[in-house]
Amino acid sequence: MVADGGGVNGVELTVVLFFFIVVSFGGFFAARWRRGESMHSLDEWGLGGRGFGTWVTWFLLGGDLYTAYTFVAVPAAMFATGAVSGFFAVPYTIVAYPIVFVFLPRLWSVAHRHGYVTPADFVRGRYGSRGLATAVALTGILATMPYIALQLVGIQAVLDTMGLGGSGSWFVKDLPLIIAFAVLAAYTYSSGLRAPALIAFVKDTLIYIVIVVAIIYVGVKIGFNDMFGAAKTKMTTPNPKTHIPPGTFLTTDKTYWAYATLAFGSALALFMYPHSITAVLSSRGRNVIRRNTAILPAYSLMLALLALLGFAAIYEVGKGKMNVFGQDHVANAQLAVPHFFEAVFPSWFAGVAFAAIAIGALVPAAIMSIAAANLFTRNIYREFIKPDATPKQESQVSKIVSLVVKFGALLFVLGLDKQNALNMQLLGGVWILQTIVSIVAGLYTRWFHRWALLLGWAAGMIYGTVEAYRQKVPVLTTKLVHGKPVTTAHGTRHFGSSLAEFPFTHTKVYIAAAALVINVLVAVVVTLILRALKVPDGVDETEPGDYHADETSERVVRTTKREVAGAEPSAAG
Image (cartoon, rainbow, N blue to C red; front, side, top):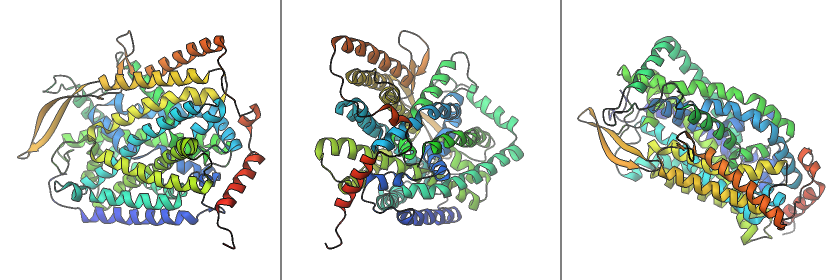
């Protein structure tokens, strides 16, 4: 069994270190891969030169969207609470692609045409509103922080499983995570978006190998009937402390709306995240985006199979082959999949699985930190602090901010309740979904008034945050005491769920979906009022043809070349 205090597994650690060294080398080498004339601009450092083709973009988006959240948190939610909070991730990644197939090419075109680097750049240009652009930028940064932290939780789960999460001093316990973070920060600083684009090839290859082997094992050694039977037994057996079942095996009429809104709301939010849009804008053409929305669902099949490993872990726990107790002897559902691999596979293959999880955390963490840094640089630093910033100054500030973002995420995860990691990321989904009206509606119409959009955003943010805070759940801790699990209650905690009753009803829905309804209602009503009062509505710098263009504006090209040339040291100097 796992977590017996037996020390570090040398074979697993060696395999993980090997792949970590490989991807670290690749991360630093990426600075020379497809390098442009200069790295002193956000187009090059933050968007990889806007030149990635179909396959590079596919691996980059796969590495960006299917993360350590995929490997750790989704099966952990299946293990702990079942279908509603776990398996919803599968339909939402399926539903998302037909939706984004429609509007992402338009966003790519207008961004390419005007040299926009962030979604807030587009909002600034479309509505002529610094306030609305700042709101979109700050929301993106705020929503990204817990998402990065969730990736680091994946690394932490792997380190704990290998025996590196002992109960010594906090510094010694977390030193491997700090080292991994430092190396990630270093190659992201030097190589920008090219680093995660290159190492995504390694990450995705490992993930496909691991999941194919794992599902074959489940089918041959466990049997899907026995696996589902074990999961059903757990999810329908009341907890002796709370006297209610721990989760949901199948959705019922009481959970249909919760499941549907959670899936659909998450699908709408997926490509509102700054890191998703950053990966999209790094591609070289509209058709690249279309092709990727057609082939990315292949990852959703993998996600469905991965989610089932949470149920497989329930079966193995029932047979006494594994548990989810960490090195600190406290039960942690985030350890379900790492402990499953350690319990049923040879150490060398468990090491491959752990490497896939760790790299699956490094790739998106790098992209997310770059996206957050780009938002700060373009929409806060350049907008309010140094309007005449050169491309070189922008890239330098973005590099520094990317380090700050990673450091903040590291502090966040070191103090984070591991069982709460998924809900914190889902809270980020509540926030980021409130930007969809300004961004997606703006791709098609200028009917909404800029002040109405800002007020709608504020209403959605306030409602969503307050409602999420009001969700209380009992805090139960299960710890090994003299070799036996002992569960104790510690009151309740806030932010316990991303589901709440829809206003004036008793039907539970995804909080973000309810917040979005309020957002849209406020935006529509206030727009009608402001239009009637003929309040000035800002200047739109875009044109209808910009949303179908494949070529960059000649004015933008000339300006960029001139600014980059001015930022480079002269030959004589």
